Image (cartoon, rainbow, N blue to C red):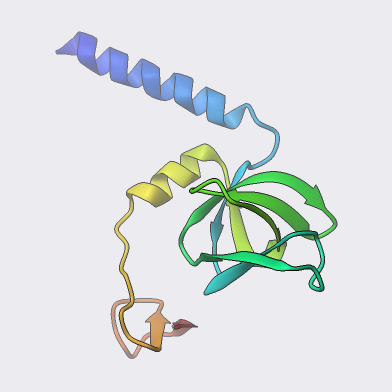
Length: 125
């Protein structure tokens, strides 16, 4: 039993060191309803795809306030910094493990707490 605990603890420390060794956060979680992915880092550039709120992307390159990202399904495109929240691999794993909800309504309000009288945080479509 103790060997198993030490193995898990050691593995956690190794993974933590690997994740924290990067100077910059290499991943991001989309924080807008739909993040536009463009061919070039410009609002005038062709719209290639969109990524949905809550999905993660890998940060590949940066130019001004634009980032070249890669989606979970391998698609690449440029999006603005305001479209995501940058995270390291530990934060990304924590995000993937936390409970989530899927909105089925055409329009809904997200609240800061599970009460309709709490502060509204965002509207989702």
